Length: 503
Ligand SMILES: *[C@@H]1O[C@H](CO)[C@@H](O)[C@H](O)[C@H]1NC(C)=O
Ligand SMILES: *[C@@H]1O[C@H](CO)[C@@H](O)[C@H](O)[C@H]1NC(C)=O
Ligand SMILES: *[C@@H]1O[C@H](CO)[C@@H](O)[C@H](O)[C@H]1NC(C)=O
Ligand SMILES: *[C@@H]1O[C@H](CO)[C@@H](O)[C@H](O)[C@H]1NC(C)=O
Ligand SMILES: *[C@@H]1O[C@H](CO)[C@@H](O)[C@H](O)[C@H]1NC(C)=O
Image 1 (tube, rainbow, N blue to C red):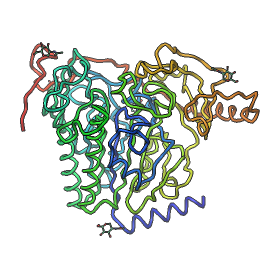
Image 2: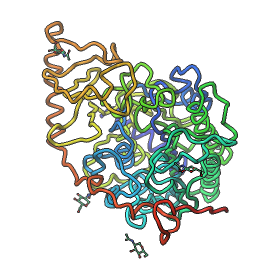
Image 3: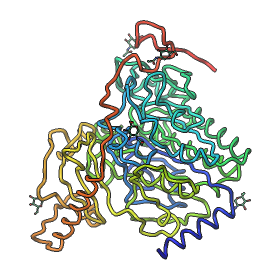
Image 4: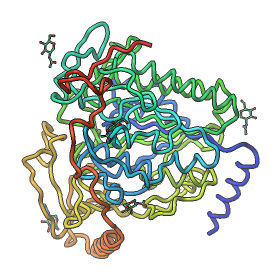
């Protein structure tokens, strides 16, 4: 309770000294723990993220809630596990019938009643639905520019990913509409022009920040980037500039947009009143080999409940307010909504939240409130429950399984040949001394771990008892007629969904 008072004072003084804070949420796609310059990647070029890390608070133990995109995003925006909102199993597709239910409350909807301007650019991936039922504009975002799902969810074989005319690598998803670019609820390009996309995002962000600052309106900007998901792309300013090939150039392009956003915050005088938070949706897609990202010293990657699948780089930056440093506190994407709500003084949504605020971590460099991390697989079920639990330094795996997304790694555990396996007793790792999950601990050698395992078991049971699975939205299936088409009356679909719109 001591701490609580201190935090209260910090918040009160913040509120008195300045108007409501702004929030910028940066979310990378399939970017691994070991992919950034500041996390030790030797050839990544990320000067702006490096600066953010040096001047901000860097998390070493920050987690997403899923090893794949859509569920991870659902949790980020609602502060609730994907199992509650029904964003499982797997991910949404262009013609998906379901989407993030409209009665879920997103961060944008938490802030809007307080007078915030809200905007998002980039990858939504929480549904499109009949006539755009599930677009971000229906979930609290005033402005949207972006691709409503993954940018490989459409044929890309003949598209240009790098200037002057380097075709995208691979075929991406054939048999569906080409990838659209949307402004609000209108398709403005189909297929999207990858080479100029990032500049459009950067301009959109600049314009949004400038106009909000001019009106002295508090704002929330959510930028879930397509970078560094397959197929990598980049424009003229980034192509060929990193030593890391296409992946490095895509990452550099993302980094440059972050640089532009920071510069705009500074130029408009709002930098010291803005919390910037950066993290990634899930681990690297190792099956893409050198184009697939890197989880550093963590085991496996995307699709798995090993550390490489769900532990992410993360930074909180607030100039002059958050002291630079490093935190080992357990935190999750679930905790972002409660943190933002607390800082804005907004009431929490009246639903069962799974997140806790990170106020103590951000402002006191304290330990925070989070006791555990629960690891759901791609396809959570009530029968199996969570695959693993982390409590403090210990992680217990009840089930393990490899994943197609982590194919091609030399470690067999990551690959599809490692089928679902139940562990009784659970595999137990000390992530502080063994972050790579190499050494399964035996209670025979460490009798003190008996009580640890018991405590973890109780946490797991309590958590699972509290978990009510919502109806699966992804399980509602797909209807190809629902896929976005710039020319809805055309035939035959999907090939005819192409529009050269210039503006
Ligand atoms: C949203 O509506 C569905 C269907 O009525 C219901 O099952 C679910 O609990 C609601 N979710 C929230 C967050 O209110
Ligand atoms: C979408 O809207 C159009 C025009 O209002 C309507 O004709 C059509 O039936 C709608 N489609 C669906 C799937 O709801
Ligand atoms: C790519 O373009 C060529 C030439 O126009 C065409 O023959 C081919 O079918 C296209 N491939 C795909 C995958 O769209
Ligand atoms: C924040 O920056 C603005 C503009 O640079 C300055 O006027 C203001 O005093 C600063 N506020 C605080 C609390 O540092
Ligand atoms: C992990 O360690 C426990 C305790 O020593 C042991 O019972 C179990 O077989 C081990 N599991 C594996 C997969 O090595």
